Image (cartoon, rainbow, N blue to C red):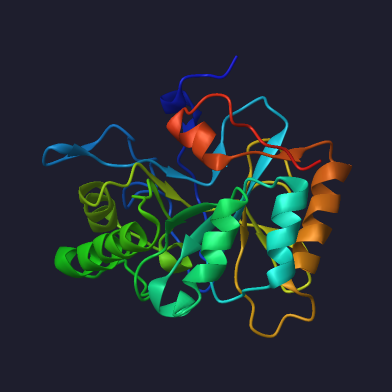
Length: 247
């Protein structure tokens, strides 16, 4: 039986994809209480791993720079419940590609308007980046994403306040990241995928492999470890009954 959604969230140490991240919490490194309140809103938890006994990992894709048409077919054929964290200035005129991905089962989530490093920016600027992309995605897809990934994995308490005020319920980082060859590196803990890991697949401009090829390599590693791909939103938001798998 799945545990209650609040019990599945785990705040952790990690480093960003292009700059140092930080431990979700205070300056002395203690984990932040996910129930902390700013104003009238509860701050969203920060997660890079979901505490679950299910043999699942979660595939998340950043920015939206790569629009490999074969990837749509892969997501459809394998019924992959991937999460796409989109940046408006990167996607540009390519929203139609992500509409096709959404139609075959991908979810669309928030990765800011312009991809700035948010940590240290004033509240108004952070809120404009997060809420601005919420508005863009609502106008494009008619949805209000609940998950947010800060660019480079960097954030501060102001980011969490702004995210909460924009309707975000969880800030999503990653424990594993795929490089240009589809190989995994880990931000903390031992190497090797384990149940509940969130995997980041960043956009790579000079990759020798296409996004589809990198994903296929990831799927082979996932299957080799006896795991499958789960729908991240189900585990973070407690939505029952939609656990798609990589077959």
